[in-house]
Length: 160
Image: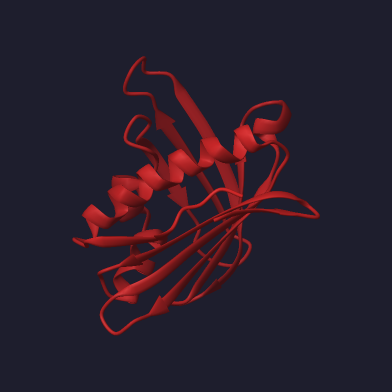
């Protein structure tokens, strides 16, 4: 679901991931696991370093499958409550809107062997920038599901 907020446009993705919450949470917080699925299929991660603690920094690089170009991004962990919440800033290393810092909040709800996963990212200035993240996150989440050996039911994916 996408919604406008006073701070700008936000992105919300919800999924049921058929894998235990602890396993899904660990896939986000273990850099060795995360580098295997982070980034969309067309721009997979080549590097991901994470200091997974409140105030800890993370940095990553994605490489285009098509032309080999590199995209760098980074952020800081704002809050970590194992195994239910991760909040971090996200910023591309570019000028302009693409270099604007956003806040990504992930929640992991235990469903008895499965996980209700929610990603909220905000604010975006334009729908185009938000929609680029929709495609990127959904592709990365598809890769995450494969890495944790899960089948997924996409719960919400609407535009408002």
